[in-house]
Image 1 (cartoon, rainbow, N blue to C red):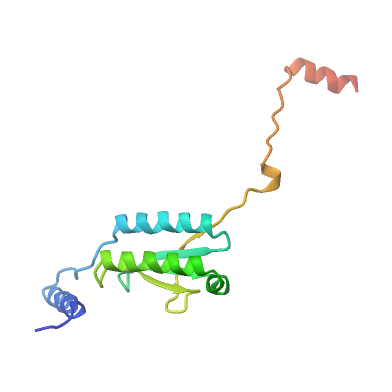
Image 2 (image 1 turned 60 degrees about the vertical axis):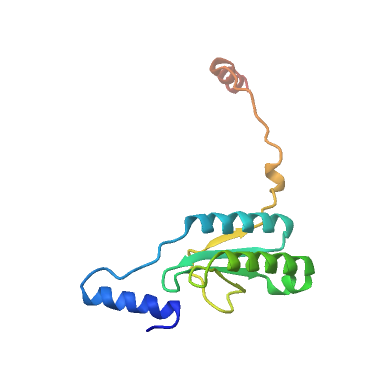
Length: 148
C-alpha cells in the first residue's frame, strides 16, 4: 500500500499507462492562478522594486513563483512578513500536491522564458500629457501650404 500522495499518483499513472489510457494529469487551477496574479499585482504596487515571475509547470504539476531582486527583499522586513504570511495561507488552503512553490531569483527551480512577469510600471514622462490638434478643413490646409 503506497504511503504518500505522490506514491498514489504514480500508481494511478502506471495503471493507466498499462491499460493504454492517457495518464492522470492534474489540471491547472485557474482560481489559484487568479489569486496568485492579483496578489502579485498588489505586491508590486506596494513594493515598486519587486519583480515577480510565475507560471504553471506541467512537469512539477505546480505553480512556481519567483521574487527578485533578493537583495532588496532581504532589506525589507515588511515584504518578508507579508510574503511569508501569504505563502503560509496558500499552503494551508491547498494540499501538498497543489501548493505553489515560492523562491527568490529562481534558486529552487528555473522558469521558462514564457513565464509571466509582473512588475511595477511607472508612467513615462512623455506620455503624461497627450495633446490633440483640431483637424483643419482640407481646403484651408492646402491654402496654407500653397501660401508658403
